[in-house]
Image (cartoon, rainbow, N blue to C red; front, side):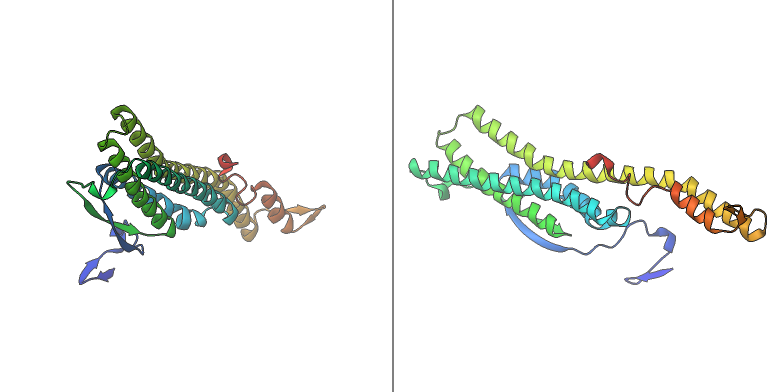
Amino acid sequence: MIRHSGEVIMASDRSTKSRPYVVQSLKLQSFHAQQVFRRGFDLYTDAIYSLSVVLRAVGTEDQVRAMEELIDDRLNRAQNDIRNEIARLEKVVEDNGITLDRVNYSEPLVVEAKISSHRSARYAGILHEFDGLIAKLDALWLSGMIPDNEYSRILYEWKRRILKIASSARGTVRQAMIDSRKQAQQESPNQNMQNKTAGQILSGGTEPIINGESGIDEISMGNAGEMPESGSKLFGWLR
């Protein structure tokens, strides 16, 4: 039984874990950036927390780092491409004498992002830069420099790409969890057999034979040979 904030909570009622986080306020002007935040941020944050903290309990450090590098690479490429696109749009805006500060938004929104890892902070930063990209795109569209169909296509492709970062992270972690369960199920029968054999030895029921003599080393070595190497099958789909 645990007393928390003046309440008594039974240990069996604790279905969630208390996680550390900091709150970062983001001002998002455009509807499109707001929409991506609502659909993608929590999804991404939960997946990254599971990857950084939970999966380290079931996988090797090298395997988890390989997945982190894969996710970091997606973040790096998206951020670089957003910045390059912003620079390109700024050049078009400047060449055509368009004033960016004349563009206003009817429903700007300040959202509170719960940052539970440094990768969550990076994703929030990408959303903020994406909002800035849209502001320049909107200025060009409102000035007639970009036709409606091209404007819609660019918006759709960028939103899809940023949301895919979140969905890919979730898929990566989900598959890793499935692999960890499979490995646990494969190891369980071997562990049960090892425990049963050890019980027989202690009760005097059966003695192992080593080079024609009785002893216990053969059982521990034999069972070790049957067990898969630590992490050998976990996350094998990643290679």
